[in-house]
Amino acid sequence: MKNKSLIALGASLACGLMLSFAAPLPAMAAGGTNLVVGADTTFPPFESETNGEVTGFDIDMIQAIAKAEDMTVSLKTLPFNGIIPSLQAGSIDAAVAGITIKTSRLQNVDFSDAYYKSGLSILVKEDSDIKGFDDLKGHVVATKKATSSVDYLTEHQFSADYIKQFQNIDAAYQALMTGGADAVIFDNPVNIDFKTKHKGVKTVGPLLTGEYYGVAISKKKPELAAKINDGLAKIKENGEYKKLFEKYFGGDLSGAVEGVVKPTDVAVKD
View 1: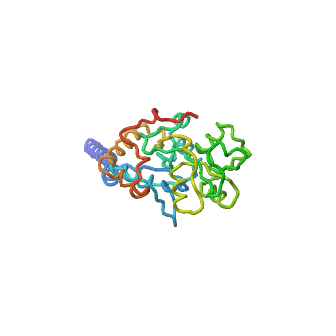
View 2: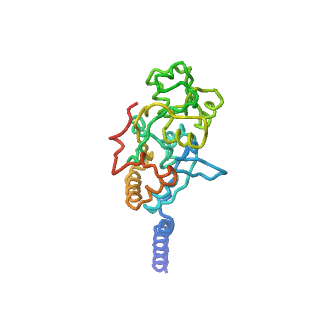
View 3: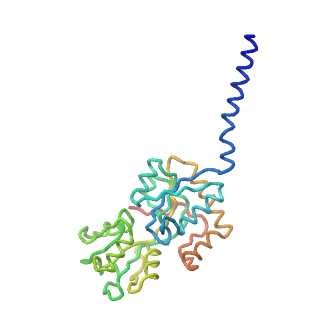
């Protein structure tokens, strides 16, 4: 009786172990890996939110990349200046928000290969006498907090008293339109998007910088960069990447990145 009981107990334990190891497999097969992606929704046409729906170039791109790599995406919206801390804390796996690849950011997070080439431009009212960066001294410039625009102004000894920083770029544009600022310095595709949708404004001067956007990735997920890079290569090859430029930029491919551009090769120095 004792031996039979031991045999029965052993069989029961073995069965339980088999079930515990097998249990996660159906869930993984059904839904793949879930990717928690942070997004700042105040950066059209890359990210925006209307009636609770988050849309944009970056959103469609990360969804396409995830699908190509058998992953699902859960979006988590947060302010731009909360993205890097959230990645460091591991509360999100990756982030899309038109994030410029910078040497300082590479110390805290990983980046995918570059997916968009951008630069800073100056937006002013049509009747403004400002023709370029040198004309901005003595004028109030609006921009978004914690962005490369602020870095550029600071690096060029622009007085802090003349820099108005806002939590979102819409507020900076509002300041320009209502006379609270004389110019906006921000990422050129976003300035162009605003100019296209609103009368009475123009961009002036050449691009102030050349910079690249990448998907920011938590260093707690070292394997994730390779998967996102693989997915990015796949959507470039199958044409989905190009279709995003047709959808969000009217077919303008000036920001498209041909081939593979590694983040360490294009990181902007602070």
